[in-house]
Image (tube, rainbow, N blue to C red; front, top):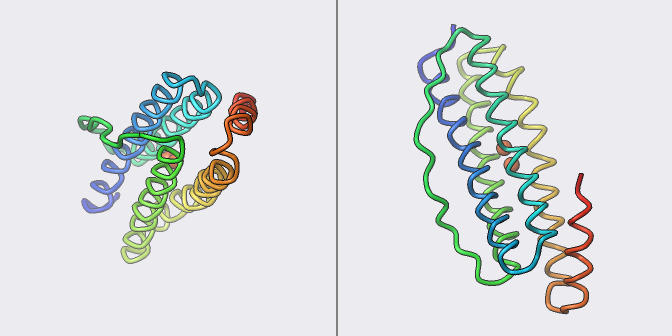
Length: 162
Ligand SMILES: [Fe+2]
Ligand SMILES: [Fe+2]
């Protein structure tokens, strides 16, 4: 049986993962609208990954016999003005998500909830990849984003994300 506190944190994390998906869909739309379809594609796939994270949390709650209660997803409110904005806000957002997941780890550890610790460990590991891929994108936009032909090539590269 999960403690009330841990149930609450896991339910909240489902909302945060869906918000992440919504945020990245918003970025995807923005980049598509300004002709950067490779960036648009990259963030569309990222949004799908976030939905998959939400699914993992819902699945875990179900396995622990907890009813999933979906909350309203907030409207994305981060406005992209230049190419660098979106990738930087994405990295900042991933760091926020990492802190949120690590808090669940800390609370589960405190409660000696070994099942939740085992489950959340995989998501702590996943956040290393999430922050890394977000950081790589920031570095690339910083390196090539100011030159139109380099930006064109970077956009082409991002189209290739599988
Ligand atoms: Fe996520
Ligand atoms: Fe993420």
